[in-house]
Length: 203
Image 1: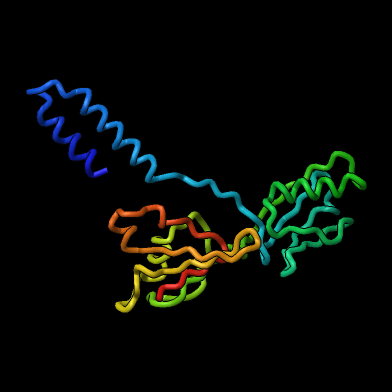
Image 2 (image 1 turned 120 degrees about the vertical axis):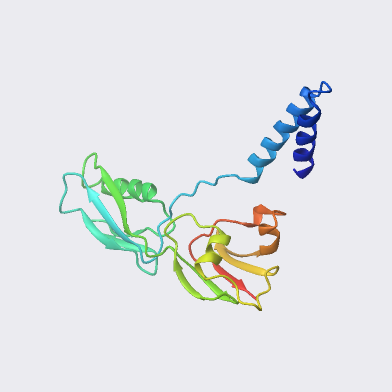
């Protein structure tokens, strides 16, 4: 990218003397393309987790509408349906599950699922940071922002060997993060978004 920026500036300087407009435009397009690649927005869909408090509203059926808690086994209890799996489901998926279960009792039910308290959305930072501990995940948060929440690093932190532990799709993953490469602009891909239950370890 630095190469394209240099060529673009060089072209603009010499453009009045030589006919370098095509070359300048090509480098401008290259810069824009690389910037687009560096920042790729990721759309995250909320998944219900253990400990979340949910409000289940069945339209025109107040006896079936309730506020419920996602237990440690990932289940919720609802009138008529008893236990229903909720953890790992999106609110829309759970809405469809409840509507399907109620077909036997209510014709054309309309269900709304509201996550009233997203208690499950937390992550953890351990090791050589100013404030280790558990943090709420209330918005999209990157690794760099997580370090800022934790008050930054101690003087003994090994910033090139940070580890992020993640449980995903039934498997434990180890993601290595080089903080220095991120802040120097060498590898922005390592500034990943934090997910619920992630554990960051700074050795």
